[in-house]
Length: 414
Image 1 (cartoon, rainbow, N blue to C red):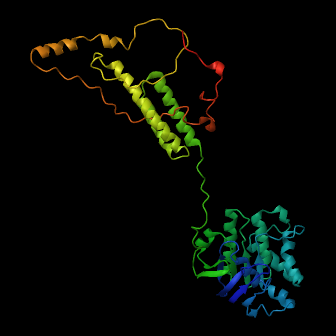
Image 2 (cartoon, one colour):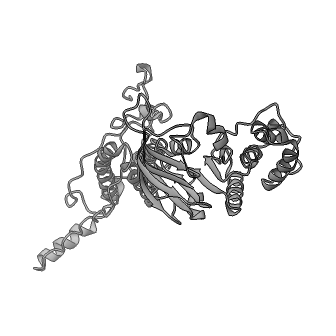
Image 3 (cartoon, rainbow, N blue to C red):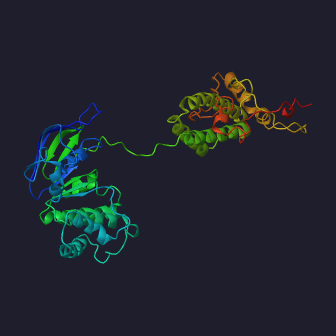
């Protein structure tokens, strides 16, 4: 029915041939898919079968005729046995559905009686019965493609060529067109279809000829579309900056809590650590690492101050205080004198030195002083305002870390 014998096709002005040593044969009644990437040579094969092009080397034989030796005068008679369907429907916009289908028969000189009988039959075959008087603009895309298929089948050809017939259609309509082509093939018409629809090829399991850069790399019966792993994925990229802003907000809130109260709630710590770990995988990994180191020193100083406040031992038995951390003044006004809540617990207990003296006079060693509790708190990621360029994240003004005026600065209190 169709035979390619070592066919090579070169177009003028191109260095790579469109087809290179393509060799296959299609039997009568087969349904063959031509698959491959754009530019692999699928459409070139269909144009050679339709005698729109002639091969540079090799032979193309269709219906027992060598198309290279076929004269131009006989090409229209040859094409009466070959129907063609394209991605763009190529309908005549000023003619009705009936007239578009009948036009092909009128060109080849069919009788008026044959046209009046064949056109309604082929329109019923493609599911357009009752729409003979409509114009193309009154039809949907799927219906226009059905008109194109009916036009190709009007002369009852032996071969039907389809070049991406579902390329301009929605998925549901594409399924209807494929079912129509399958019914046409079941009636004995040979169908050769070029397509990129991997789903249809995998489901129908017909013969598949795969082309790559003009070379035939696979000829498989009852095959699928092939390897689709090289097709790039369209997975959305993660939004940059969201994790950084979330982590920065969390650690700044934690820093404010430490400065104001000197204590930290465990839930706040966990939330800050979680946000910082997310940000560590994002674009501010290095900045969060530096902020975490600074937070460890701030947390240790805060815990040391809290231990001093709660320790009942006298000043001589207490460990050396931790390095104090400079804090901003909470208010500029003078405060009334009041008992210091920090120094009061240090002056109250006096029984411990008396008990140690009694134990020494009795010959017993004094009891060892209790050690301050060891902190088990994990390092808390705190972001200092000067270590992160929060202005770039759009948070400087909202968090009060933007530029300041000299008139806003507060001097020492009286």
